[in-house]
Amino acid sequence: MGFRPAHIKKYFAWVKRRADAYKQDRRFSREYARLCFEFEWSQLGNKPQELIDAKSKAKQEWILAYLEKTCPETIAAYRNMPAPEHMNEPQKEVKLWSMWWQGENEAAPLFRLCIESAKKHMHGDVVVLDKDNYKNYFDIPEYMLRKLAEGKIALQHICDYMVVSILATQGGFFTGATVWCSQDIPDSVLRAPFYTCKAATDRTFFMSRSRWVGYLLAGRKGFPLFTFARDFLEEYWRKVDAAVDYLVLDYIFELAYRNIPCVKAMVDANPDNNPLRNELIAHLSDAYDAEKFKRYTQGDTMFYKLSWKFGAKDTLTADGRVTNYGHMLDEYDIEE
Image 1 (cartoon, rainbow, N blue to C red):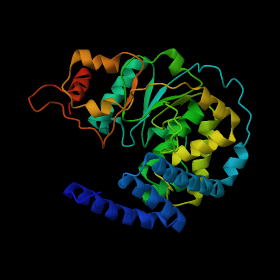
Image 2: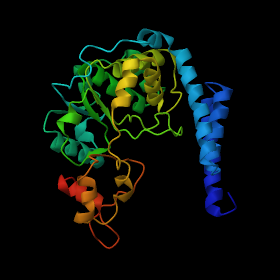
Image 3: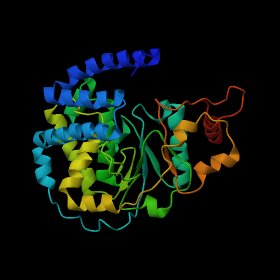
Image 4: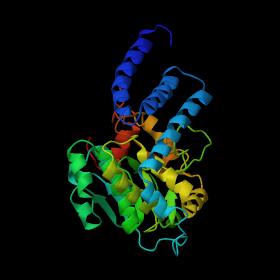
């Protein structure tokens, strides 16, 4: 790393963060804490990509084995489940779902931008789930709500449960709170029996291998991927008081992929799509240029993942020009 001040500052920030995380990881096992440490250290030390991926894979396989041991009932119930009848047929009735726990009226400008873009480009019913109206469609087990109140379950993991529950019970098209839609959604996508953003890779850095994303999922009511994930989360949170990984839903999807042949078939059949979905976030504060912005509103990408934490979101440049983000807000008359 050398002795540059920026490197030293980064190192000590990591040490403090990892010390806290190490205590959390040891709740599962010392081995797990070690695997997490080695994975993060390989990244901090700018190790070769092959080594980083190998450390990531070792951690992932430990988590998968832990989940299999912790939730055998759900896995046994779904293993080799036959494909539901009519699973490959397009959806007939489609609602677009999104989510803001506190309620749409309390939503931040970025979410309002994203949900308004969905309303514009779907041309159908859009429902924003919140802490009250989800009860119209499904229940959240009392023990999960209690653990949320006790700080044992993060709100993100309650939202994961809500996503797979609404799709399991209703079907339809779910977009997360930071997904901006730039074009009309074609019927072939909107009504697909299963759809998610995909850019499959052999790299093992992420558990999903970019075969799916949790922030954009769609499919038929009762698709086993969604019912399996819902039931698995119920069993997991009935037994455990902490998430083994922030992206635990990706691991549950992987177990569905490995154990339910029709899930594997549908995931594999979903073509790669939306290749630029992670690009716009880095250019939100660029000066808006109508011609250049067509890159995001025309072509083969219609869904873009934005973020609360990453990507500068200035509405004006230093010399007073409207930025891409400012233009996007203006399009829907949203004030920052």
